[in-house]
Length: 409
Ligand code: AMP
Ligand code: MG
Image (tube, rainbow, N blue to C red; front, side):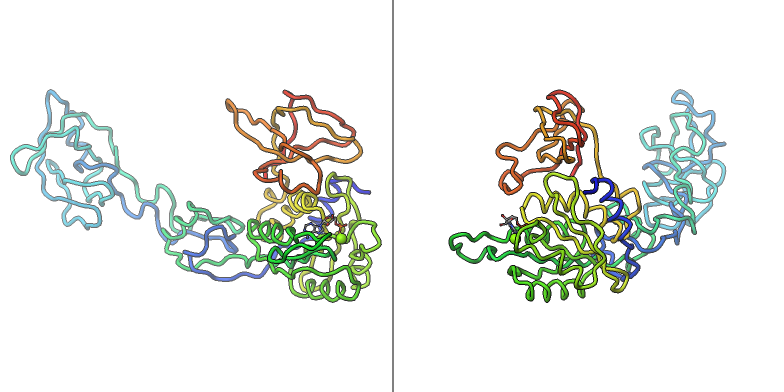
């Protein structure tokens, strides 16, 4: 049995980032991953412009101005935002100017209106000694034409969307979404629409994994329930492998009489790289690679709902990030140190993941175990889980009040 970190590395090595891209409308690009570098088509700011409502002046005219001895200038133009100034400021002149408006030629300094007094109709008193070039946002100070703005692999969140809009990118080239086929194996499974007969169980995994895929930016292809029947399972697995970048199946990977997944993977020509991992919950994890297109990775996850999700969180998330085109920093586990509010226990034989909640208390992260049974079949107390505490191999207890490594979900 291999360790969690070995499994993580094997899985990451199996994944090739998607190379296919698509061009989409900027309004639909939130959360997508940029496939090309974006360079600036413009200078930012585009023009020298005013950071204040006030007056545009020549610094040389007002360098000795004070509240006691204000210098008076003639106001020769009014420049609102969006307006092209019509004249050059001469010595002794000023322009009334508003935030964002172009600083007229000849002026080099803005005096905010709070430090001025308008006299008669067309004159202004400067009642302060301004700093040279104050409140002028210089053309190109933030970025120049041709400067790189966003690197390939950037996730498009609100700031990046704003940048793309500002530089005139209405269509944006992003990586296509990863496609993930999901199938649930088990004679006992029914859909949530059906009424349970004795011994039956709702296939919650299909829904949980589809949500996981969606959250990770992928497109789930839900293939439904497949009974524990070799022929039917072979057909379904083969179809799944042919239609996606990743395949997730749940169940059928233990050592029971009806656990066929691993045998079928081998028959279908899969290169089985992982059979089980020293993790709790989720030990029976089967991972195989198929040479189809850029390569398909098959994840045979355990059937228990918690085991299936822990397997996704621990092993599939980084793999999805790599597949989707995210940079290497995003492939790793997002783990921090937190203080555990309860004693954590484990049997020490496998790396143990305990689910619960992380909260900030007085600026420090505190981890609290989910209430109730920590059985891998108990999906009920998974609700609200936002973190997994990690108890390493050979550690059997972590005392309340001490630190524990926690993976943020
Ligand atoms: P298996 O790995 O097939 O032995 O399944 C282990 C346990 O997980 C069994 O108790 C199953 O009933 C349960 N299980 C399997 N598949 C699902 C599923 N799709 N949704 C919810 N529970 C499941
Ligand atoms: Mg089963």
